[in-house]
Image (cartoon, rainbow, N blue to C red; front, top):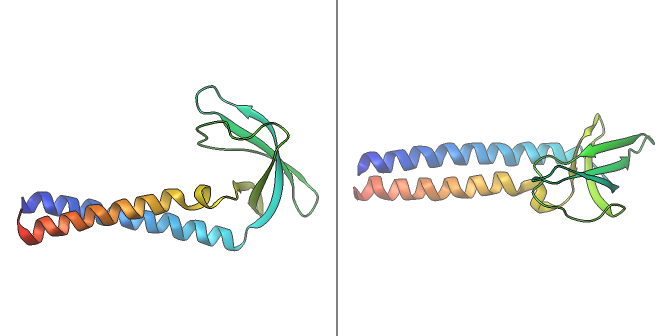
Length: 127
C-alpha cells in the first residue's frame, strides 16, 4: 500500500501546486483590474448557456464580452452585473463575484491537500 500512498501523495502535491498557481494568477490579475458595471445583452449556447455582457471602459469604449464556461442562465437581458477588466486588455474581463474569481483554484488546492494528506497517512502507516 505504500506505493498507493505515494501515488496519492504525488497526485495531491501536483493538484495543490496547480491550484495555488491558479489562485496566484487570479490575485495578480485582480491587482490591476478595474471594477465596472456591465449589462447583460444576450445569452448564447444551448446546453452551456453563456451570458453576453456589454460594458464601457473608463476611456469610454464599449466592450462586448462573452462568458466562458457558463453552466446556467443567471440574470436576464437588461440586468446589470458587476465586472472586472484589465485596462490593457479590456476583453480579458470577469464577472466580479468571489465565487467566479477564485473557486477553481481554491477547490483544486483543497482537493490537493486532501489527496496529499491521505497519501502521507498511507505512506507513514503503510496501510
